[in-house]
Picture (tube, chains in turn purple, red):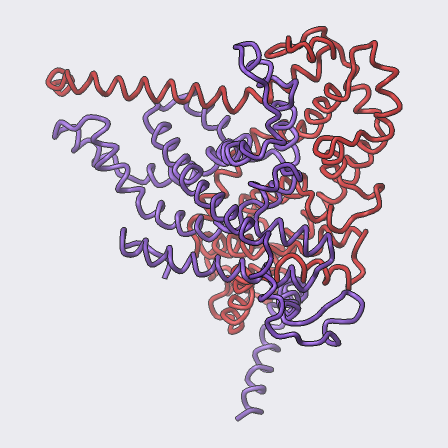
Length: 305
Length: 299
């Protein structure tokens, strides 16, 4: 049995040698850069100090997971992760849908094209530059504070103000993502047959009614799928951006699990502990997606699996 | 048009909807563009007007000195050159790999298709996380090398998009008849599939170019030698951690009477960094929008 299986395989490899050869480089790279790090997860259960190898490190069972429960910074990081995620879902998720509906009400023409092109622009700008621009605009002598002072208000040092962090983060996320996110919805809208609108006009429907009864229902499948995807990213927030944005002054509201892993795990070289926190984060994300999928299937009938 | 006459009342509400949409779009355009306008205005202004809060729309005390400082900075120039190099090497490598991988996966009769596809897509859902990845790169001795930035460039997502394109646009009979004529898969891929895939290749290349141009995190983790810094990492030092480069430190004091401050130089650096992206933008967005459509129809 065994040998005949390999004989079949070998015959196939000989027959399609080019195809196997083409696949080899990516398979090797993906194996090295994606599968080998999976093995690193065992560090969460081992006492790794960075001096010996992973193999040689001693097993410590659930020690690091017990430490997580005792770590006073974990509840804060966890709550920040959840809050940022929930606010993103509340504000960043519907924004592109709204924009697509708005674009759809514009007359076809140069202005519509221009508005759309402008809306995607921030998506192409690097996070470093976006945060850099935020720092300039929100600086104590930046344009926003000059404006506040000119109308008789107190200037605020936004970037080091923990209570403004979430607002700034969420608004800038909307700013970068809204236009880009609307593309998918516009595509879905464009596949709605014109006859549906014409029929509705005949029946005397006005624009708002058409939006409510034709456009929105047609978007629902895309919305559900996008929603499940967003839930998957909920606990990941865009942590590269937070790393650029936050400072010790704003850790109180800005430090999420992913940034905590980076700071405590990587910068302070608590490797094993960092891997354990990261693992908890991934497992929670996975459960969330699973749960969101269930809920969406109940509510709308559309889901991934 | 009878319809128009009959529903006059509803027509008015329709006009309201149109007007709201128009106003909302104008507002959106303002919000999207204003930050750029402000930064450009500051970069061309005299420092004293900026600190007094007199620059909001147009440059005041127009001068190019902030750009003189920014563009004579050796770290910025180095960063620019490094980024161009990383971007071209990374893009060529990734596009090549994507083509090579998508081709076999698009062939129905290929027996290895399914297992390899599962092997690749698994990584889209599970990863070891930041720390194991960091340790791997360290153990491979790729820190402070170009490889840390371009080698992990296999994107399963792009492979799937490319494969979907092959399946939808290139009839499999083309390969079969070419095989009959004695061609092998290498010639088929390079002579038939690649030329027929120009739109998707353009899209992927642009995606990769923007991605590489804008990326900084891997470089921050793995590149310590300042001479190897990509532009974004230099920019991060100056804009985010507010650490002027040594060139800026030495020159800004001298340029102060000419209207230059760290703030105006930072703005000039922002403009210089995003300029290439903005310049290819019209071309870029056309293909990007097309690409997202192809990607949306996941096979």
